Image (cartoon, rainbow, N blue to C red; front, side, top):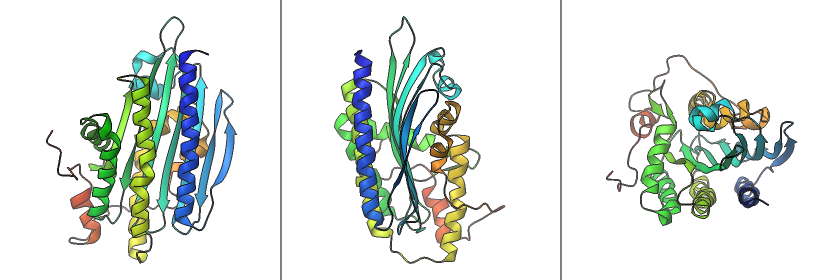
Length: 309
């Protein structure tokens, strides 16, 4: 077995175990519904396990997907990002999740960890890791945002002091809706193209990020899931979910890669909220909780008060 194939097998084993672990913890936190698995095969090569929980007590919809796809031609979204990979075949595997809760006081969240190999005859394989997690609140609590970022920092600090500030900034920059002039939420971590200082260290960092997700999110679920809310809060949540749709269909690399590589459409679009609404010219009432989201939270900032760079 060639070295990269051994590495791919190691990553796949971790990712499938991570999917199991996250689904178990989310199902326990919900307490009212179970994940349904839909295994699928891709005609061009590969397949995956899509797991979706709908209509739970806490989660309106939660999807946790594992996929491994491969092919002879790099998708356009990948070569646009890395033009030197044109003409190579590829192997890509990852776990991606999106959670849309019922309660507007409980944030939507997204996480992803992935591994990519691009090959060409007569050349060394090019490989890298990517991933991260981010939080999209509707009615934020600052202590939750601080906890989220503290957990993110603790996950990557063992690998070097630069990782949290670098990956936080990357997350703020990546999850930014240019046409709206606002961030999608309060950020977290985002990284891509990670292959230094080598496979073992890069793989360890990716594992740390994947394993930190539930530590970051589930304490927020426990604190906020039972807060009473009314139709006003629900309508604002549905309106703000529209930003999630806009970002995923316009900017998200994973969505574009999946669709362009012939992935399974139902699994790729699992990230879409089950209900959403748009409203022309919406402006929050001055001094309202809705206005606070725009004024305080939808802009990059140093949530831990530690970043000097």
